[in-house]
Length: 194
Image 1 (cartoon, rainbow, N blue to C red):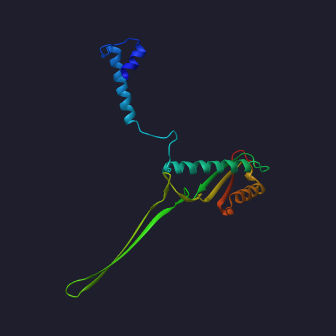
Image 2 (image 1 turned 180 degrees about the horizontal axis):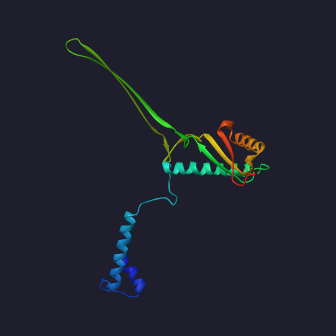
Image 3 (image 1 turned 30 degrees about the vertical axis):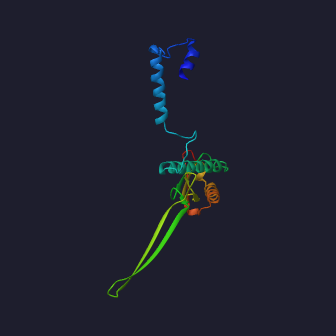
């Protein structure tokens, strides 16, 4: 079959059945062998990577991004309070959140009763419990994903010198984040009215 293919390409009919490969032919054979070996050792994969679980660094990056987004949204809203001026917000979270995964649990209970020749009797009870994370399609099954709790908010506003504006900013932050007033601190920033 190879010989027929080469005859069609070259247009020459080799009556002896032996093909004169020449220098180009040797390079073609070497290239074909290299490609074959590369195909054997190349790792199989999908066009999109299958992500099973996020690493702790990726999870904390996601929490940091969510925290920054929340702070940015709060800044945008608080800066619209009349007299607030330029506003900056910093948020402190209790943790990186909590992820609860489904688990496969297996309980084994075994009881053995032995009698020996001298009339003695012995009972052996064994209990074994194994648990592992349930996986579906190569990914762990997430049951619940709890966001971290906001434990403190610092608001720096140019207009916070005025007690009424300070109170409005505190009330707005408390309402938006559903936290206690003692968790919000509003301070005057540079450029505030004297």
